[in-house]
Image 1: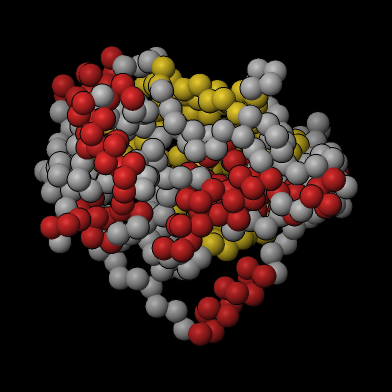
Image 2: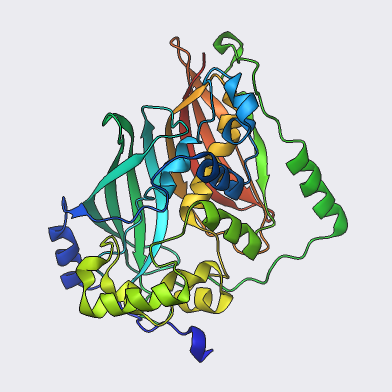
Length: 374
């Protein structure tokens, strides 16, 4: 369709790689979606992930918890800045690859968060679905505005992959939207409505054993409403704007690029069709080389944290989270996220191996979490 065709289909060149390497250490000018953790921004983010934990929206429940009030999921910081980058490599598609998080402080209602980000290393790779691609990394510190306290640190990665029309570009085989039988949908409904949450009862580290299962949570079936709900809490990129503001950004990309957030190249904003529209439009996803309209990378990372936060309970905390995205989830897919305890430490810390699978039995993400039990 002419109305959804992306304008650039570029291969990665040695010159691009040299230019990107020269940017290492450069501070990035970002555009936060949420500046403050309010009752509403926390709820919008948590519900956008499908997480109904009352710590994130129920004032009475949260007041009686060890936190004394509403808190945010640690991955709420994605809504401040997700670490995604599309700088340089003009016309080459950015696709999120994952994050390594270290969390220092609990995010509480009323906290204003200030992200400070800089570009990291660029590495070159080859794979089954693209002949040559790069991973661009970003280091971000998140500080509380009121006292400058370091809340969290993150190392995020973004694949820079030539689109399908480029030589050696992204080449997932198109996949039809999955059709479910009534009994399959009923099983998904039961899974979602009987989700295990530890809640107010503290989990004793002495009762935890290597091999213990972190019960899975279910996500999906993914559709456009799923994506819209997530974007209400955490926008997908700084290019997501209503029509009139999109025209402003397209104009600034040509005439005043210094007015734009520079974690994306000006060409990203000037393209007639937003490259991130593949998260909504299957035709754009096909132009990119994806198997169909697909979910958002930081969204998937937030999904991976959900079962862990259920398991630790109200008094437990997440200290670290690493997620590596292995394959896209497309509209119609259902994803189960869970884990297994791999180490129990004397200080009450527990290491957990994480994984995600879809309705076809394919592994779509993996990672780990470090939690501290009370």
